[in-house]
Amino acid sequence: MVVILQRTMLVQGNAKKEVQPDIAYLQLGVVTTNPNVQRAQEENRLIANRMIQALIAAGIPQEDIETSSYTSFPRYETDSSGKSVLSTYEVRHIFRIKVRDITKTGTIVDVAFENGANISESVSFEVSNYNEIYRHVLQLAVVDGAKKAHAMAVTLQVCLSPVPIKVEEVTQQVFGGPRYASFAVQEKASTPIEPQEITINASVNLEYLY
Image (cartoon, rainbow, N blue to C red; front, top):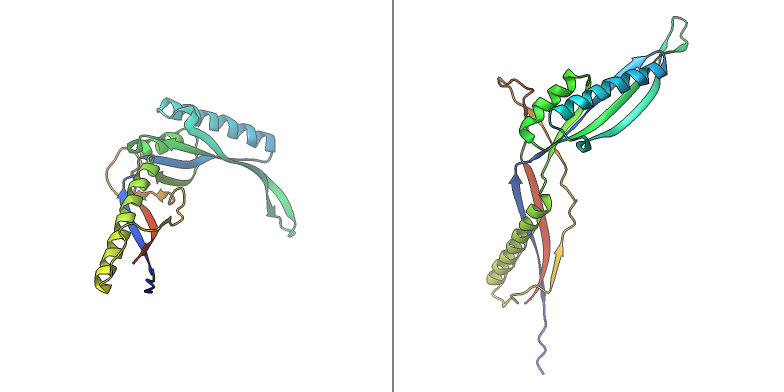
């Protein structure tokens, strides 16, 4: 009796696509200081409200403006005797602002700072239809893996089963991470913020019989 051994071939397929982001996220806000903590908080509230109203007037929906963090803490300094004494209180209110029209990112930054914002933590960009694009890239990864398996079978002069017995998606993050802005040096009326392309990657492990 002839025993036919079934052997397996493992390959990994990879694909990627460069895409232009279409959503901007601004992390900015208002910092106030005052020896009286209640006054520092009240000053911050008034300025923050003024900034929010200006952003809404500039076309940002209120639901796209949300608090990222709010902190209130004392600051100390050392006096002439070397003793640590309370200097002032600092109140910091940071907002996360979603800009759906990416071409207006610089303008929205300017509006915020013209109306009381005095701190900016980051400007990042993302893709709204990430899942749709990722699924397409995943298909390309499967095709890449199949081509690799075929090439290896031809080289080894073996007969490869056309359908893999196992297909495994390599774990992917929900989003590859935001891309941060670069600042272009050019003549513009608003702050020049230029988004970079985002790379979406996909990988699969394929197992074939031959």
